[in-house]
Length: 47
Image 1 (tube, rainbow, N blue to C red):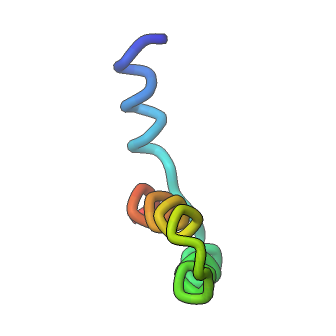
Image 2: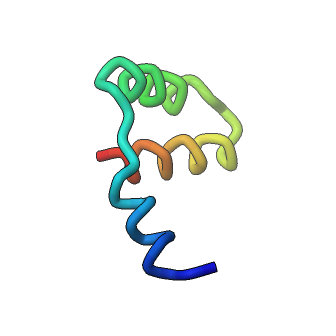
């Protein structure tokens, strides 16, 4: 796997405003810390 390709794909990652709002709400609702961390990572990558 080429690193440059991965970094380029990560930089192009985006979510709509509505999707981010839904993810943030799910992050607040979940009690599973592992799931919360995964949601947080997706939100961070998309912003």
